[in-house]
Every structure is written in structure tokens, then in C-alpha cells.
Amino acid sequence: MTGFFSLHGRGAIRLALCVAGGAVLLAALFWWMTRPDFQVLFTELEPADASAVVEALEKRKVPYQLADQGRSVLVDRDVLYPMRMKLLGDGLDLKGTVGLELFSQTEYGMTEFSQKINYLRALQGELARTVMGFDEVRRARVHLALADSSALRRRGPGAKASVWVTLAEGRALQREQVSGIQRLVASAVPALSPSAVTVLDHRGVALSLRASDDDGVAAEDVRLQWKKDIETHLAQKAAGILDATLGPERATVAVDVALDPSAVRLTRESVLGTAADGGGRGVLVRKRERRLAGDNPVPGPDGASAGASRSSDSIEAEYLAGREVRQTVLGSGAIRRIGVGVVLREALPDDGLARLRDVISLAVGLDTDRGDGIAFTQAGAALALPAGHDEPAAVPHDIPPPAPLWLPVLLLPVVACVLVSLWRRRARHRLPPVSLSEHERARLLIQVRRWLSVGDEGKTAS
Image: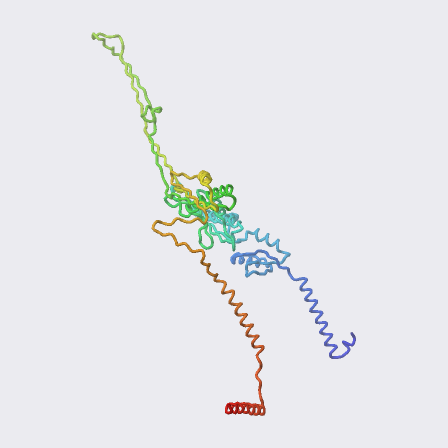
């Protein structure tokens, strides 16, 4: 080791490098041990919410870091939980909503109109926070149009509301959840019906069904949903009977329901006051009796006085004849006709088919007077041709079926492989070309000429 530093020039340089390396190593170890451990304070923030959190941290001079493209804010682990509680306790406005904390700082001299506006904002914010409690909802906004409660405008339009939701990626609200949101908002707002609450997603698609139009007739989407629900319910009942009778997946059933879209309004009018009330004359309002007694004697038959005084009685009665009007509204959606179609895998005897028809008709609620019907058929059975059409000609059985189209496709690679192998084998046994020198060519030419001359002499001798 002493030899490593024994040289005057190089030894000093090596010593300096070792000391510097050790100092850097110690500094890096100290930084790694004392560096702050940043943890997530808030995540999945919108740009406006992230800006509010950063502004609050800068006011408190707390170091922070941004991650996930600015959607997450990180702070040191030592101040993570205290800082989170402080920010939430100070009423940090996250997700762009404000609630009833608006009234925690009451300002003197506030007008009644300002108080109504603050109450509306607080109510909208509280409802939005509740809707954002759904796992499928990432962000929500509620807009309320409250009804005027003044005495002069009691017959004005009722309250209305709309809920705008931003759904999480890959998530969707079920129909029951949308109906629950409508009932939630309607329960928190006076004089608001669930049908007056509209729910939309971030694409502008209405998630809630419009219950009825201005005339009280059910909307088209509501009628279509009623039709689907009724058909599904009746099909499940018929399928259960078929599975219990024939076995599982031995028959297929389909149900079609025709609904009546019209709404009927019935008005009944009757006169108040019956025979028990006042002899059919109406309702007795006031009655007064008067009796008059006189001193004049009553004359007899012969003109003499009969010794009795004359008196008179009068009765005054006042009756009131009114009327009563009752209106009954029958909503749309009444069943006009039901049709059931059943496809059987196997044929059934006539008596068994008749019993099965009766059972399904009772379970589904078919009414022949209404025009309901049920039909059975067997899978693969020949369909009857319309009148005027000839039956198709029978195909002779001795004609072989055509070859499948995929057979040439499979044989083509096999034939190509056989041809390639034959060509390679022939090329392997082929003799390579021989190159001759000038001397060998001359000798070969002399030999060929000699063979030719011998052939010519043989022909001449013959």
C-alpha cells in the first residue's frame, strides 16, 4: 500500500483522487439518508383543484412535487397527514364545489337576494358532493331552478333540476343508480318531483328517461323501456315453464307486447244533494219558521161567530244545489296485445302440446278476446310456401356433394413442396460441365474426323 503512494507525482494524485472519491461517497450517502420522502397528498385532481392545493402549500411554504402530469401533489412524509387535515379543515375548495361552509363566514348587511343565492350555491354543492360519492362518478355538477314561493305566484312553474356527471373511464351508471340520483335530488329540494330531474353524462347523453311530455303522455323512451321490461318478464316466465316441462335448453320462447301509447282522461260530474239531504231539492242551507196569531173571530157557516181566533204559519227554507267534478287520468302503457312464439327442439304429441299451450297462456296472461295468441313450431320444420309458388325440385341422391373450397388451398403447398424436392434432386445428380484445353480439343477433333471418315468408307464399300 505504501508503494502505491511512494512516487512523488503519481502517488500524490492517487491520494487526492481517493480522498475526493471518499468525500463524494460520504456526501451521496448523507444526501440519500437525509433527503425528503415525498408521499401523495392528493391525487386525481383537476387542473383547477391542483392549482388551489399548490397555492395553499406555497402560502404555508411547504415543499411539494407534482406527478402524474400535474394530477397528483406530493409532500414530505413527515408533514403529510397534518397538512392534509389543515387544508381540509380550512375549507379547501376541491372538485370545484362549495357547500354549507358558505354560511360559516356571515357578512353583515347581506341582502335577502344574496342570501338566496348563497343558499342555492350551497345546496347545489352539497348535492354534487353526494353524487360524487358514487364509485362510477368522478366529477358532478348540479343545477337547480327553484320554484317561486311567493304568495302571488303559487301557480307558476314547478322546480326543476339537472345533474351533469363525468364518469370514470370504463364505468357506467345503471338505470337504478340514475333513478336513485333523481330521487336524491328531488328529496332535497322542495316541490321537486323525480321526473323533473335530468341526468346527463360528460358526452351530453341523457341518462334519465323522460317520464312524460307536456300533455301527460308517456315519452317514447319510457314506453320502449316498459315494452322491454314486460317482454323480458313474460319471456322468463314462459321459459321457466318450458325448462321445467321439457328440460333445460329444449325450447326457445319469444314474447312481443304491443302497448297503447294514448292517455285517457275521464271527467265525472254529479249534482250535490240527494233525497236524504232535502228531498232531492239540494242541500239545506237555512230554514226559518213564522207563526202569526190574530184576534178576529172565525165566522161560522151561518155568518155567526164560531168563537175561535184566526192564526197562520209560514216556513222559509233555502237550499243550495251544487255540483262535484272528478277527473281520472288513465296513463299510457296499457297492454293492447300479447304474442308468444315457441320453437321446440323435438316434436310433441297433440295432447301434450295443447296442455303446454294452456299452461303458458295462463302464466303469461293471454286473452283471446283482446287478440292475444301463441304459436308452436319445431326447429328445422319445413315452412309452408305461399300460394302460387312451386315446390323446389328434389335433388337426386346419387350426385356427389361438391368438394369443399378449402381442399385446393391445402393441397397447393403440398404440391409445391414435392416439385421443389424433385428439382433439387435432379440438380444434385446432374454432371458438372468439363473444360478442355487446346491440346485436348485438337485430339478430340482428330478422333471425331477419323470416326466420320470410317463411316464414309463403310458407306462407299456397301
